[in-house]
Image (cartoon, rainbow, N blue to C red; front, side):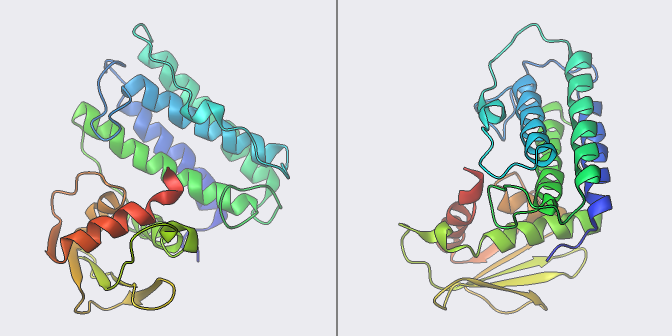
Length: 253
């Protein structure tokens, strides 16, 4: 289930990119990114630009086979980059991606690295890829990070959807129990049930669970992405939570 419309997604890619670019003004590109320890700020931007280009190529060419993702992770370290040039390149790439998505439309068949097989997958995935890396950039430069409620809900819904894929748990120790995630500021709640043959996510009211996680909606999102979540309070089996987070994040590795 997607909670935002296709037009909102491709517009949000550009908006989130612009917000991230604002963090580059006056910043040193060699600043370490605490949430991506292998990268500095310039490398983070290059990674995101590579992801946008990867998605744009897949959508624009109507790819039927996997598109090489070398630019996504091949991010050499530079010490003399111009933040303004980095920002401009990132913005231009986001605009190209949004244009390719608009031209394709949501239902156009295209290769995707996850379930979906249409341009809609790329629109949603790149929206939240950009959003989370904006959080990384904000943390690196000490800026505030906030997310509109509907965007945060959709991003968390995407994560939880992928957390139920069988391949997330292949070769992992058996997980058994339930996890309740509750947003303290919106009242939204999700129950992750790991007691059946396959994981199931229910959305509704808070329930007693093996692990209970309470935080603002934004911090719940940051927590599942293994980013600092200052308002998070966890009770219950924290070992189960840690193992679930490791398994459910397989699709980003």
